[in-house]
Length: 171
Image (tube, rainbow, N blue to C red; front, side, top):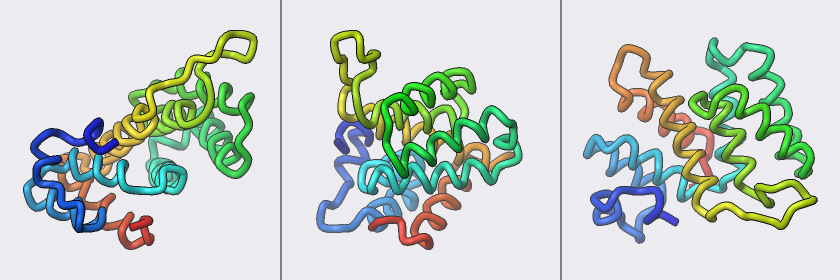
């Protein structure tokens, strides 16, 4: 999975004897913030990281729109009780929000996490296994840029990584 998320340079520096936090820290020292977030997406329990990232996205002022709140509520409900009809509703809501928003990207990540991409009346078509984590990584990058505001995205990534680590982040 890591080879689908991290750059070749990051993979070469990746130490399998270290935990995810240590590898992400080494990538941040090298100012490879996108790879550090990719490491976070690859090494974490996906549902836990998705829920945490959603919480961080909802704390942002731009996420207070009713449509974003509705999609976020559906995501929370799905995480508590997975349901295929809800998963398709989340996809539709995320598409309307735009996959270039953190909440929209998280909705697409959830949609790809489990189940077919086609409705029940058609033959099942499943996404590539890495796509859900890749979209979770995109949500983390979007959030990093938003958090950093006028600063470099590296600053936002540092904030996310330290807060994830402080929250117990699954490492």
